[in-house]
Length: 445
Image 1: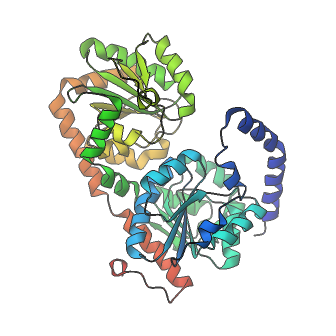
Image 2: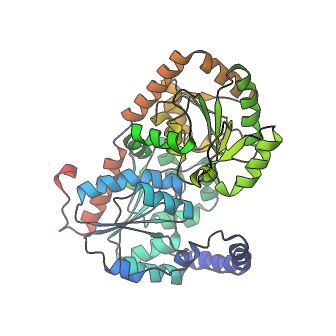
Image 3: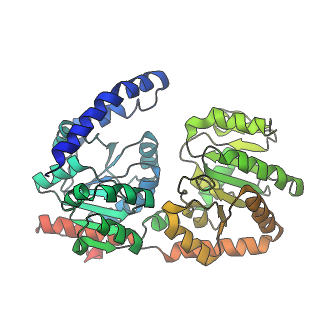
């Protein structure tokens, strides 16, 4: 790639400037300690050598959200290529934990290397993929360049280009056009995403619209046993009304607590389950809860350690990977990252359980999902905490209508299934172009 040298020079400069900062942060807080070795290319070579299946398919999902999309694609790939070795990498520790929970069809989980030339070369020597699959909108120039040099096809699946990402990519179109010329196929979630990737360099003949694989993964995961597991963990009775505020960001907890304090005046038995997006904010969230006048607060980690809940009205979930099943307990749901300008979070998780979902106006990263739920009557956008309070109270006063609209949301999720099979087909097609002798199982033919 013509501009790769300039890119690598900037990476090297960034490493010199930021390396000491992150080194001190790892020592002081322990954050990144589990992943830093893998990111620098320290992998278990024997684990890769032990893989016997062929072809070797490497998927990369950055964090929790991308893993949710990757899991059903991996399941479809396993059906299409039962003899394959399927490998899944993540960039974050939370993503790695989620991958081990929901992507059991993968043969190996590992951390994605930093996109430094020498690190990428080392890891590629161990992985030796027959195809490399990117999830959503992660383009790593050095790894893509390595794939091109080795004749390894690169496929983007569940492609999503947020407005913020689009503006960044478009400003450096000259560079990304060159990177995207080495991507064999780009499967996008929506027509808008397809238009955006084409605008900053994607070749039109390599772009298709295939839908959102998250619909498949979420619909498949809903199960009564999972809901009962959450009920037992949180020590909540079957008749107890529950307000779940999921994936909240700084500034939203205060609004949620204000809303909750008004809701319990009319519905005094309701419990608030507060699930911050980042569990490392645990102490800050607890301070916010107590400052709002709720001293009767308990955390999920405390209950996991054996503490018995004795009527505490607020539960703070400070454990990764529990939110999806907790949505199954909800009477009403607020999905965060939306009352503050963060672009929203995944509203489909609650909808898959048949829940009406409330969210704020900042949903830039989830416009397609928002449109699906609002068309079904299961998505409710509110402009403020006051509007959220009014909306929730209105919903709670009409439980039959709330249940009806929630069912419509779940039905909408079920109607949009099928994308994971389509993405698996695109991956198989790329494999067949590079390895004509390879034949998948019958279901993709």
